Length: 266
Image 1 (cartoon, one colour):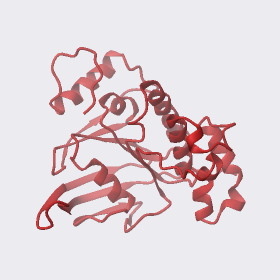
Image 2 (cartoon, helix red, strand yellow; image 1 turned 180 degrees about the vertical axis):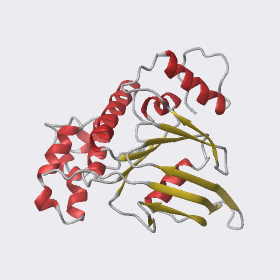
Image 3 (cartoon, one colour; image 1 turned 90 degrees about the horizontal axis):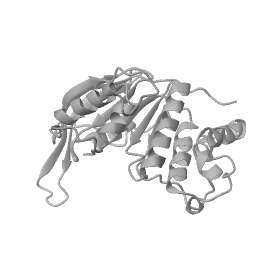
C-alpha cells in the first residue's frame, strides 16, 4: 500500500549563512542575511532572484545539508539539525545511479530505509504516476533527460517526504518537456499535498506553479518581496492575470519595461 505523504510546516527564523571564499581563505562570502520565512503545510513556494542570491543555499539549509551561522530552522516544530527522509531533494541534475535500472533507482530510498520488502508495490505505483510505465528495466542512458527527471522525482516522492525541495530540476530540459513535467509536479502536489519549495530562474515557471513567490535580493540574500499568486489551477499562461503577475515580478527584479511577450529568465 502506498504511504500517504504528510505535509510539513517549515519555519525559517533570522537565518544568516557565510562561506569561506575558495580563492582566498581569509575572505568570506555572505550568502544569506537575516532571512525569515514561514511556509505552510501543503504550500507551493518558489524562490527567485539573481544568480548568487542564496536561493540554493536556503534549500540546502532546509535539507539539513549545511548549517546556518545564526538563526534557526524547524519542521513541524522540530529543529532541523541534519538530513532526513521527511525532506526530499530533487536536483537540477537528475543524479540517477547509472548502474541501476529506473526501477532500481526509484526503489533506492526504500531500500536504504529498510522498508523495501513491505513497500515494493510502491515502486510500480510511482513509476506509473510519473509516466514511466514500461521503462522499469531501462537504464538512465537509455532514456531521455526528461524521463530521467521524472524518475528522479519518483525516487524523491516514494519515501513520502513531508517536504520536497526542488533545486531547478527542470532547468536543463527543452521547453515542451519542461511544461509537461511542470504539470506532473503540480498533479503530485495536488494529490499528495506535499509541501514544495522550488528554486527557479524562470519567471513564467514561478507564476505558473506557485502559491507564493519569494523574491530574494542580490547577495547577501534577503527577502525583498513576497507575491501571492491568486490564480486558480490549471493556469492559462497567456491570460491577462497571468501576464500581470509576470510583469510584477519582472519589475521587482528590474527586468520590466515594455512587455514584448518574449520569455524571460534570470
